[in-house]
Image (cartoon, rainbow, N blue to C red; front, top):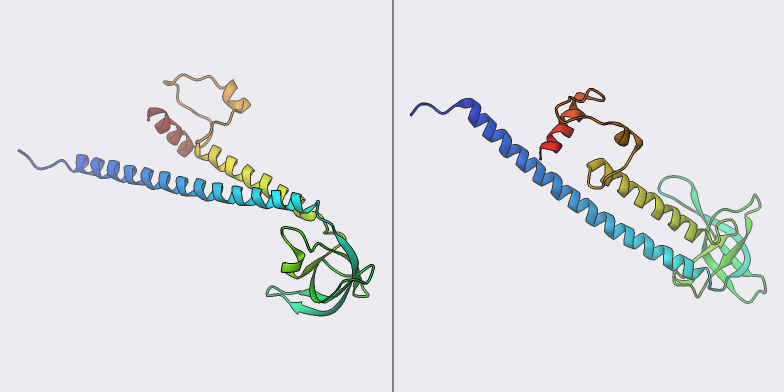
Length: 193
């Protein structure tokens, strides 16, 4: 028996390394998909709650800014007093979700009986942002699902049909000459697996 072949030892080590890389890559994708699923369910639940809250009664009134609480990244959050139009409800030291005009006064709505209650959050909403919750959650959900689908397609987990793939007809023996050499190598390896 002769000495072990260094090239075969190297090939075995590289094959073992590729197997580990593939396992870690699969594990990373599984973790990503689980986190994506949890976030999608959470955003969808917030969207449903925001739509249900639209049906709850809103009480309109006037917010008068008395103070400005500094924010960590600069700017400030308006704090003040909110008085309903009929004068029946007065809320002091309440936050404004939005902004005031130059005179520190603005119209604002208050929803005490909603699921995401203004009573527990101690906040009133400026007229421009009243009812913005469902739109915000809807856009966030669409953007997030779009990103997850894009990432899944980039990893090759879901097939994306494009015009380029339908037009290209090549035999396995014919080398790919379009695109980068690295991408072509990855594609040829994927075909062999």
